[in-house]
Image 1 (spheres, rainbow, N blue to C red):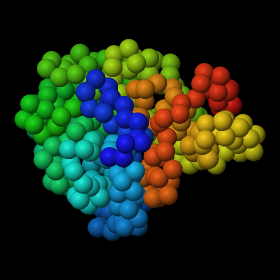
Image 2: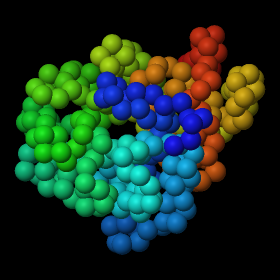
Image 3: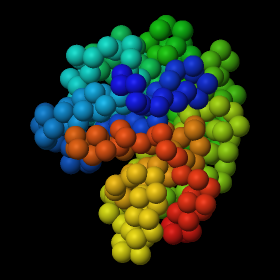
Image 4: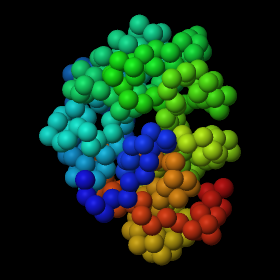
Length: 285
């Protein structure tokens, strides 16, 4: 990996990953087309992921629901697997132990790998006890199929329940909707992650593109901050806000455009000071 990339420890796993990751949720159209065996703009998506890897991004997130695990497999096959941190997610209908194990095996086949670095529960299933799912997760970890356990879209009480259900392993991460327009995690989940050494993966970090091109008033203020830190785009400002909020935060913008991925890879080394963080939060209050 390029030496210019400033890596961060992912929670308390002891593994260092790029502060910016690559997400592979494309859209519902992609999911529907993939169900029919059609892969829209497949070459560009593979190229985007490879561009990120070449630039030093080693955190790659997918999910069985996204139908992009096979895309990740094609993108990473020529790289050193041990230098990558591949995360995927299990759908909430597969949280009973036997279904969870089958889903993990299916993801392993689609990813073309012997292990998953981070296996996450995509959403809680209120019909399945969290403790039952976490016990199955620990079994997968003991069997060497997964290395770390994560959750996604869990409330703080449910998150704590997941943590307390783990007996031999620790919760490595949670994945939540987090961006300048959607900062509810800053009230409770982010402080909990900070205090307990848990990584927070921020999905929709650009608010479905709304933060990539800001309206006039916000754009002027963002441009002033961008110039101070050597940034060039509204998207870089929005992502750098998340990186500056805490070292436990890892934004995972979608990797579908090679140029955008290359721009994202430049972030992580020059964080915003408190004054500029406050300016940004006031702009998006």
